[in-house]
Length: 406
Image: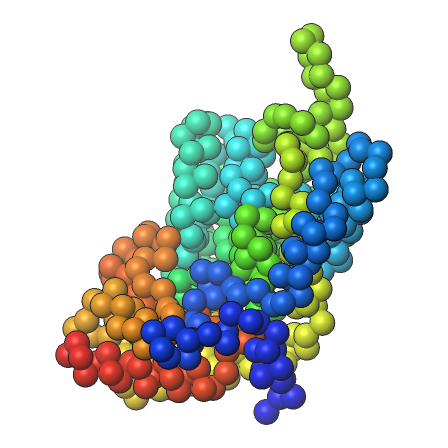
């Protein structure tokens, strides 16, 4: 048992107090987006009520307060992931834009015809398609890293794929579809041995356990605010400073320039070189509030609590005759399953009628679903605010689904 007070945490999330279809809400869709604690909602309101202004270069009090909040948010994120410098934190719209930035900018610097990009079979489309686009442009090839029969990366196959033509390895830290936790440090070490750089999609990891980019020794790390109790439309790209310095701008516009004339333009220093236009100021401030909230929790207790809930799902699912899709050796927060004889969307619809929110379909991981030989799954994803009563209600609802559909 842990000392984790999940009921106190639940009280911090106003949305959980509602009824859906006259039933208490059971929210099991945090892998798609997490709910927001009141401190985040208050931070957004405070910014718009008191401090709303554009950042940088203005000489009035509101602009000064907005700029201070915005840049303090960058510093807070840098501390949270142990970035050597806050200038290595690039604000983006989310994980997807962060990956596209690296693919479009670093990809144009690093890739030549005949080069290879290794992408794990576990990846979300946002860590596949950007690499396909830049590979087609540069004459490179995207190669999938296969899985073993449990849903983990096949590290022997990965080692066999590595050679001097591999320039980039793109892999998630936690699979959004299966919950598989990948051994990032080992993956990075092997890639670096052949001179490849590693981008880590941390969208699903950041809310579940501490992340230290220096310890991981990766080259790029991307994550989203809305997967970690913050606002939508804001995210982070962390990059190794030496790589960010050599990368060309991703977009052009205000803020990312040093000087502009029709004879030529010079670009701003990090991080602003990659932050064209007015940023999501409120989003950054809200994201910092979310990270502050998360950082104040006992992360080890959170992990233990979520692991206990996942273990309960796995055990009760087996008893009910549900088919868990894959059984990774180390999983975080995701119970992905099928009810034999029923379509996932039908299962999700009937669960919703009972106030239980899950996600159904391919989870933006169509290559993974094809690899597993399934059209999609039902995904119940867990977070800091779920409790054992949620699991009880979920399986009670599943009993009714089973009775209705089979």
